[in-house]
Length: 150
Image 1 (cartoon, rainbow, N blue to C red):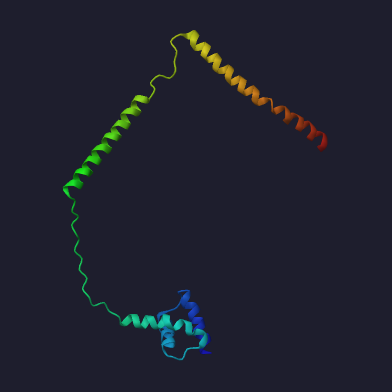
Image 2: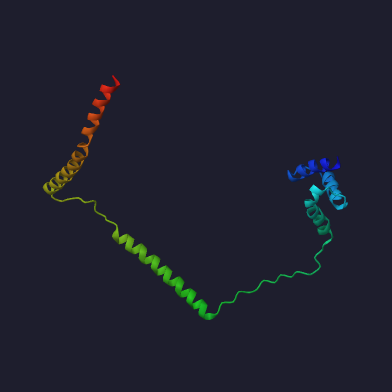
């Protein structure tokens, strides 16, 4: 009977639903030495809690931050790396500014502009016409589908 109550308390303990008094009852049961055989696996856990209460750390802990020392050679290297990185960033910005196109492809001669526009439209037309050739199969499919569905 006692083991059934303890089992219920253990279930509640593992679900974090026990009160302090119930936890004390579990600790007393597992420290008593009269534990049911199927519950003996929990003895080390509850005995550890009792043992841990008695442990104290007696050494003194002192914390002194260590000063980070850089040698003069490392400082020179770090400063040169910083300068080189700054120069690389500035060069990247300058090159990017130079590569930007300020003109939008305008033509001074209106006839040349008309000719280039016609060439571009003709190219678009050729590509669109080649894409519509395959649409004939869809029309054939629709006709066959209409015959079967009716």
